[in-house]
Image (cartoon, rainbow, N blue to C red; front, side, top):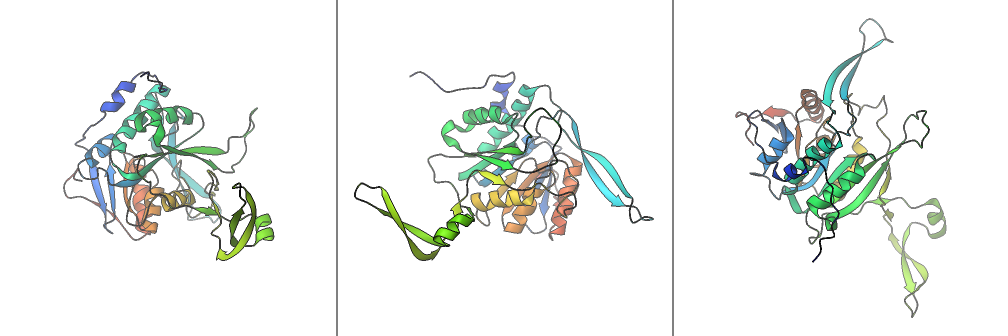
Length: 331
């Protein structure tokens, strides 16, 4: 039978399917609350190490990799000077390096991590890959190869407002989140989220559930109102969630920080309390902080000391600390 699958072709692709690697410099932290694990170092080594302890156990992996911007991104710390109520000093430190030797290099690195991550997912589990429109189409085809195109679940558009820039083009105001299931034959973990009813619907029907009446041909003829309150409309795949405001308490100064509202929605829909959430590009620690607040177990990874410190401070504000393991590299 002829193979009709669509594949990407790029230099270095073959290596992504043989990416397992251990790293003696990988350091392990646990949380004082006992619910979290943080692996500090190269995340291919960290994902490989988890194969010994967490295979088939992760319910949701959220990946927010670099966006192929080809520049170094900086953490910006803002402090008000002691001798003035107005002057604010800004201290910049390199947080992560997003420079690549072309798109093939970027896709190879991402593919390695997706291959390693797949075997960690539970049968009911999902992975959500957060990218932007300039790479989302390549990543979609790559994921079709790694997970199978029948494992594709949804493309979520995160729409946000931001300060416009002068450009002879439509303003870019969205990111893309690609969701893939581990096993298409297994019912996935999914708790349906709802949106509020439209004002016109409430004016016409109120806030009670409707029961459809059908005629002999199976066509809907009318609806009747029940006494049961409706939870709303099942949520679509375009999400309007604002970016973090410059003055928000949530802001850490870490570049590429995502709003907690976005992760809260993902975790609520794709996990239950007590289940494991994994973030191999932990960055500012948003995924881990949200998981902590929502009663999920969590695993984070990063190789940036700025990221580790930002995450540690954030978790400490929630009442838990990152504690180094006695044996370096233990998991």
